[in-house]
Structure formats: C-alpha cells, structure tokens
Image 1 (cartoon, rainbow, N blue to C red):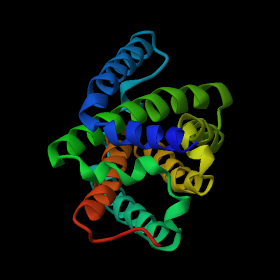
Image 2: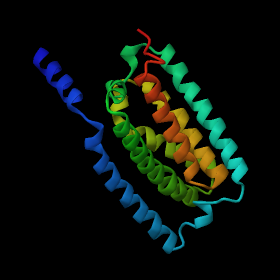
Image 3: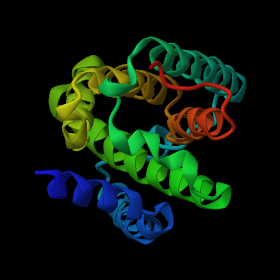
Length: 202
C-alpha cells in the first residue's frame, strides 16, 4: 500500500509542464483546423469568432473579468483546506517560469478554441439559446477535468470560471477575450503561489 502511494507521488513529481506543451499544441492545431472547416462550410461566421465592433467594451470586460476571477481564485485558496485541493494544482508553481507561461498559454488556447470556439458555438446552433449553450459547455468543461472528481470542491473552481468564459465570449463575439481572461486567471494564480504571495490553507 505504501509502495503504491510512493509510486503515485513519484509519477506526479516527475510530471513536467514542458512535456505537456507539444500534445496541447497538437490538439490546438486540430481545433484550429476544425474551426477553419466550420467557417469554410458556413457553419460559423468570422464576425462571431473575432468581432472587433466594440473594442472598448471588450477591453473593459477583459479587465473586470480577469480581476474578479483572480479574486475568486484567491478567496477559494484561502478558504478551502489544502486536503481538498487537487495535487496537480500544487505542482505547477515549481516549474521554470518560461515553461509555466508557455504551458498555460497553450493549454488555455486549446481549451477555449475547443469549448468556446467549437462546442459552445455548435450547441448554440442546435439549441438556439445562449445560456443553454453556455451551461452545457460548462458541464462538458467540468467533465473534461475528470481528475477533479476525486476532490469535488475543485469542480466549483472550474464551474464558475467556465460560465464566465462562456458569457464573455457571447457578449463580445471575440474568442480572444475568454482566451485572455482564462490565461490571466491560470497564470496569475500560479505566479501568486510561485512567489509565495498566497498559500494553501492548512
């Protein structure tokens, strides 16, 4: 039993962000190809993916959402005991800063192009209701993070942000906005841990 626990710890310790960059980059390119195909076949329209009609509004939404979600993450960190936090979330800050930056960017790019760019848009087409599409996408986003099922409180940590990402995407019609906000949230929280500006509740 102890051997199994030690083996699991070693596996988690050996995980390096730089080893995950290539797989996530490959998946992102596949998502780009799918979006391109959806645009070519008139399933999706460029104005619904990259609209710059209201740049000031998009900037304000990006800023407010980023700050709000960072505060949400900090509050959760300070109130949820460490035992309820998934182990993966405790290791990112130990990696080199360039590796963290690249991994976070590529992972966010993949998740947002898949969930907001493809899935949420297709669900909107099929259901005809924005919030139905947002909620269903959030559920799929939660299911994608299957490792959190062992620590259910972590589902709250991704459910709320996922709803926000979905809303700001439809609000701005610009996939770059949720990508930016998602990246600021993930990278910002990691930096706060890395430089010990916040710590898990004991």
